[in-house]
Structure formats: structure tokens, C-alpha cells
Length: 500
Image 1 (cartoon, rainbow, N blue to C red):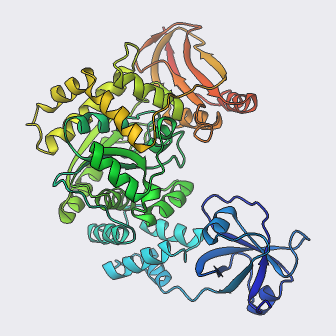
Image 2 (cartoon, helix red, strand yellow; image 1 turned 90 degrees about the horizontal axis):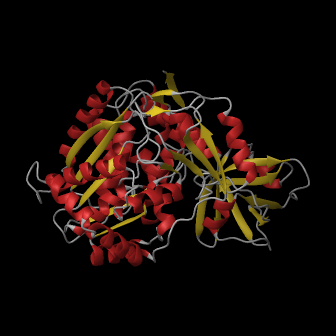
């Protein structure tokens, strides 16, 4: 017999991505007796598992008064199916929200307060509204260096932490904002071929056309357990996997999704995000790439220098050796934008193909050299030549294939069926590339959900083009997505050509 605080589960097939949502009828006895309203945070339990979800109230016959439904991610988390009973209860008052309110009014938070906030976030107690409030309170450089250190420590503590046999474990992170720029798989292949340990845990795309994990998933399996990651690194010295499966700094994954939706770039949150994941992954030496450009994430050299200083201060306290490299972010790196197209470029560089994008190769060599020198494996100034030889001799490609095979097997990327060439409407010089509109075009073509969708980009800044020359090509997996992308392109400008 069902208890008064239990309802029968009914699957409705609602996808809200990673957010947990619950659905009840407005006349449900629990809604009435408990006083639940729309967007109330409630606790739901099933066979020893518990989640916290935001309530949505339904007035139609979609649900009966004794039924409850969940979003797909919440259903998976509870491992529940239609007809089973769920137990519903109020969520206790969340004390850490008072600390968020304190921060909104400009007060400095202690390590303990930040730790409690992160614990509640990881436990699912915060709704997106609460997460937005916390992120907004931390934005516009409102976090002190002490708070950034405390936040980083709390985020490390919230998840698992990897341990490695090597005393030196290297990593690389790019602040982002550039389409393409898929240097990471190449760097891992080079430095691991030369004997360094680089267990690279990477993200999937959130607002970009591809993340490193999306690109690598075209070539091999990336959704590995911590045990599987450990074996790959033990056998090959490195890996390139999706970080979400390793449960490293899980609070960061939750915060990033809301931060991107708000389009807020909080310097303190960014530093805590990057360093917490690297330290949790067991890294001891880290290269941070900051691309600077008018349409990149970091837009001025001054902003990049400020970020560099703060990263160095926090890393020093946490015992992480770091080298921050400021690079050109005025245009895409490589030609492909989208998982399969970027994977194709990565392979072209690793295979030393004649048509491989030279800018992608050079940037990968530059950052590989920095890692070799930071780790002490090479003397300052000697890393580039060592990295170049590892790449051009085929050592790096051999290592990359072995890593892929160890992760689950290697496969070649496949390109999309539907394509449309965009041609220059005049003869002249390319004077500007809008990274943001270019990335959005690739997304509207279907990337990254459609892996072979995206944009193939054929020109560079200051290059001469002729009227009718193909400047880029849109790739899509369906006619509808291609048409949708072309409609967007008709309304915006991606490349500025100064006529001769």
C-alpha cells in the first residue's frame, strides 16, 4: 500500500539535459498538503537513492493526481521505471544560501563557507536560480585571491582525485574562445611519445561547436571510468578522455553550464575551475594558453596579463607549477570547426600530411615545447626542436594510435553528406574574422551533436582573395540543418574583406 508521501512514477520522455525536474498534477494530494508550488525544490527517493529536483506543476490530464514524472536525467539517476513508487519530501532549509546573499552584498567568504556552498551544489541542493545568484555574486572580479584559493580547494575536495606513480604529471588548458584550435590531442601524443605523463581529462562542448572530448570521440572512446583511465595512462603514459566520467571537480561541471547560459566570464570562477580540475587529475605542471583577440574570450592584452598574474598567485599557493602563455586569438586555428572536421585536422598534422593546417601544427609544437621545458625534460629553448622531431618522425602519430587503441579502438572521421560553399563577393584582403559568429554558424549547422557538421575554413587574416573564391564551406548532416545555418549566415558577417 502506498504511503501518503508516495506517488506512482509515469515516464513522459522529457529531456532537460542535466537538470533534474519533477512533474506533478496541480490537484495532487502531496502538492496540496505540502504546499508545493512550481519551481519548489523537492527531495525524491527510490530504493536508497535520492535526488533533489525542481517541481513543475501540470494542470492537464497528462498526469493523474497520484502520479509523478521526472526529466530523463533524473529518471536515470534514480533508476526508476513506470509503475514504481517514489517518495517525496520537502528539502530542508539551505544554510549556505545565506553565504551567497552575504557575497552579493560584497562580504568576503571564508574557506568553510565556500566549502559548504560547493558541498550543497554537488548534492543538488541548488537550483539554476541559486547557481546563477552565486555566479553573479562572484562575477566582475568580486572574488579576492584568498577566496579564489578557498573556492579552488573546495572544488577539488568535492570530487575524486587521481594519483600517479610519476613525480611529474603535465597538463595543458586553453581559456578558449577560438573555433578549431584542437591542439590537445597532438600535444598529448608528442609529450607522451617523449616520456612524459599526461592524463588529459577534457570537456565536451557547452556553447562551442566542439570540445576536445567531442573531437576525440570521433576517433575513439572517451567515456572511460577512473579504473580504465588509470590503465591507459599506466600502459601509454597518457590519454585524452571526457572528464565527466572521472567525477573530477563535479561542482565545476554544474557551474559552467549556468555560467555559459548567463554569458558571464568570472575571472575568479575561471581560475578555480581550471586549477581544481588539473590538481584533481593529479597534475604537477601546467601550461595555460590564453588566446587574445577582439572576438576571443579574452579580448585585450591587459586582461590577459591580469589573468596570468592571478593564475600564477593561486597556483603557487596550491603547489602547482604553471606557465601561462598568451597567444594570438584573432582568428581560428586549423581549418575544421566541428568534431569530425577537427579530428581530420588533428590526424593530418600527426600524419605529417602536406595539406595539414600549418597554424595548428605550429601552435601544438609551441605548447608541447613549453611543457617539455616546464617539466625539466628539456632545457629552455630546446623543447621546440625535440617536439618537432617527435612529430615529423612519426613517433607522435604512433603514440596517438596506441592511446586510441587502448581507450577502445581507433576509427577514421567521416564527413557530412550536405555541404555548401561560401564564396568571396569581391577581390581584396581579409582584414577581420569574427570568431563568435563563425562558431555559432558551425553550431547551427548541427555541431557538435551532429559530429560531421560544422565549417571548413579556408582563409586567414591578411590573405588575398579573389571574387568567387571559396572562403569556407558549411557541412551538415541534413538539408534542414544546412538551410537553417544558411539563413543565419545571410544575416551576419563572418569575414571582412577590404576591397583592392
